[in-house]
Amino acid sequence: MSQTATTHTTGDHWARKFLPWLFDAGFAPTVIIIMMVTMTFKSDVFLTTRNLQNILLQTSFLAIAAFGMTFVIIAAELDLSQGSSIALIGVISADVMVKNESILLGILAGLATGLILGLIIGFVTVVLRVPSFITTLGMLVMARGLAREITSGSTIGGFPEAWMDFWQYKILGLRMPIWSALAVGVIFHIILRYTQFGLRVYAVGGNAEAARRAGINVTRVRLAVFLMGGLALAIAAFTLLGRVNSGQPNAAVLTELFAVAAVVLGGTNLFGGRGSIPRTLAGVLLIGVLKNSLNLLNISSNMQDVWIGLVFMLAMTSDLIRSRVVRYTALIASGGKSNEQSIKKDLINMGS
Image (cartoon, rainbow, N blue to C red; front, side):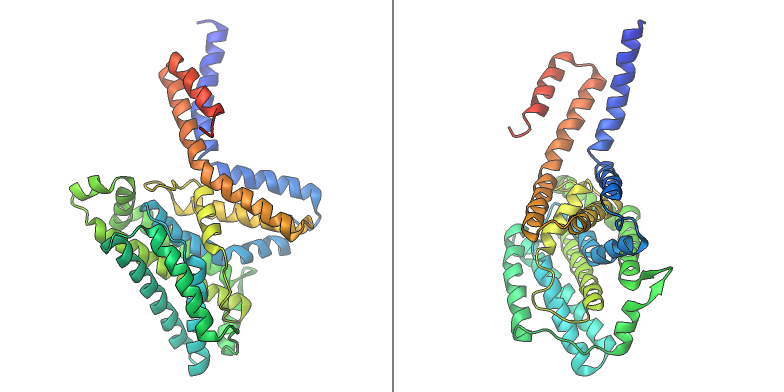
């Protein structure tokens, strides 16, 4: 075999292995590393312990919401009501906790609210067969309105000292909101990857009809997924309450968009059947590093919105890019030359 042929084969092997990884599981970590290296030269503050801890703290409640969204999206559903639901859960939990001077009652009220919201969304979506996109848009408006009605548009404060002390407590220098996010991430990862329920979520998201023929109760799995999402939102609401020390009816605006972006940027298929909690965590950290970098660079709030909008667009198109890269590299592996050129052309014309 000639040296040219050997080089070509080696290059093809590299492309088959590296490109799919780069555009899939490796995308978010790669971008994070590039951003961190860049910010090291742009700001003396970025790599300080305090700033890195701040990134983790600021993204802790988003991470929990995104973990719940991961289950929903893998099951080929969507929840666009997350921000409003977190606000409603937060004000109900705060109201019960403050009025009754009971942390336990406040937590139970928040958990019940999250599960009820998940059950309502699941029932309307799965049983009444209304698309989750429409169902959760309606819940987005309803939950925010209820949060404002309960509080008359004001915030709720005056939490028990034990509640505030708990969220300020540090372990290994990290505050409890960060540890809460890590704990939820580990538990959700175990459920998704190592339980029969998790396998069924993947099966339903990948091909619901095939899952049904295999004996899986698709209705039950989808209802359970929305309940998991509601549980995650309750914990996210507690984390946010502990961070800001008040129940705010206007809290968590656009959380659902950031959560979807984090999930998809991490490599989860927007149309279901593929994804993981570690990938979502990488997507969350990418968004956290980006927002922190924009603040350190003194980018105006208006331009920050522009950059965040670009992230959303990138997240929504990343599935298309990934699928076409995988098709291209698979074709290289098969040695199909005529089709290879058509796929290359397809890659160039991404918008078609």
